[in-house]
Length: 76
Image (cartoon, rainbow, N blue to C red):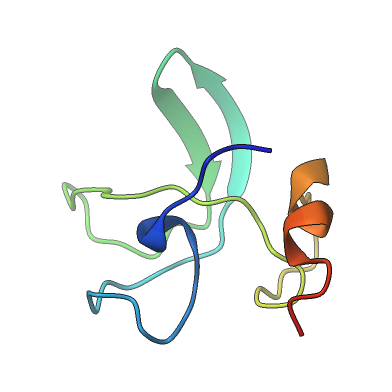
């Protein structure tokens, strides 16, 4: 399981008010990601990328990392 900190989760106590958008990952080349459905203005900085979490996110095409189920076991 990867090591995760406060910025890698979605608790209401997050220390910032940044927006979030669920996007479809089309591909990547090194650290460059190609996505579809990003709700941002051209040139906006991307500060964080998170995996899809089924209990919190809603998208018609989710792909959730396997480790998320282990992380969320017993959360609720």
